[in-house]
Length: 114
Image (tube, rainbow, N blue to C red; front, side, top):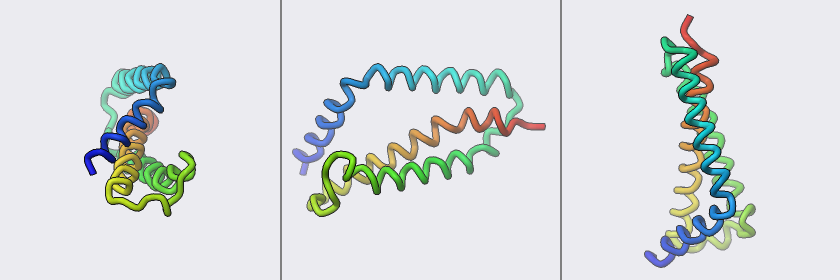
């Protein structure tokens, strides 16, 4: 089982190498959005934007869980081991959390306190 987890992580790293610059660019954009949200709306209520961001993250998580096997040329029939399911669920949760974290500052700017 450890071999499957290690293999899955290696596959993800190899797939991300060509687009590593894009990941860095997205991290910079998220940081800029966070700074902008803190400067433009210093009295914003971050909690008001959390349910909407959570819903976006949940939708992204479900879509990732449903679509990832077909996007990599696989199917649910090929997920025959516990580690395969664990990797799929972990990847979907990671996508959901990333969407939540990415959309929260922007939505906070839109829902700033009156």
